[in-house]
Length: 345
Image (cartoon, rainbow, N blue to C red; front, side, top):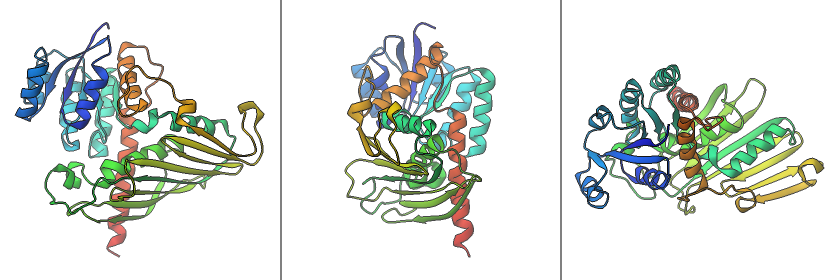
């Protein structure tokens, strides 16, 4: 396609991150931004005068000047933005969760597939070198049949009483620990283990938030006998940065992985993969693949570059489509349904 003209809808923290990652790429031109904050628009206009600025996303999409958009608005706005983009034949990368309802997500997924438009959701764990290596190890079968797993995520995001104002304090708008953080842990399970068949034993707890939950735990079960748990807490001040962890136990070994390291325990050595009996340890520096421009982590660059490569017809696959986003939304809804059903007993 030559130069891909990109617009960014919402220039908050993630919008600025995506702007900085894509801006140096030679086959991408960020031509427009839609942002409701007049202050941000004025700053952007001062330092990047050639970019077209819009207060309303509808004006940007109707201008006919973009081939693709990056959607970084609050989650409850994603559906109308993405739907309108699809109607105008525009490719979409959306921050997670890409809608707040799986039914809306399914509608969008079918629409974009039918129109041949590239669609991607920002679950960055799928692009992390450690978790990609974890999936490779699982697919090799060297730890045997998976039996149990636990997926955890911790951060010090909310560590003081909240006022309850803003979209992040409303589950309806996509706020709260389940939509904002647990979605990463759920998607990682879907990516590595597969989508669970049933959700049970869900518990939601508040620590500092007024209207949304700060901790969630749940159990996932599968028809083949596999079972696992998730536990996500964004009110844990012992963690300086958000941390994703997963432990997977198989009949022939075990995997312990986070964004930065991978430990593999094997019952017997595997010379073909140069793995010894017992513990094998890999760090991100041992296996990472360099990216052209680093911001926050290789995975952030890799996901956006894959989005552009898919538009250019150069990528072999899309690791996180709208369909994958729908699977995560369905599990989120199952957690809420399970919790509220049983909390009234």
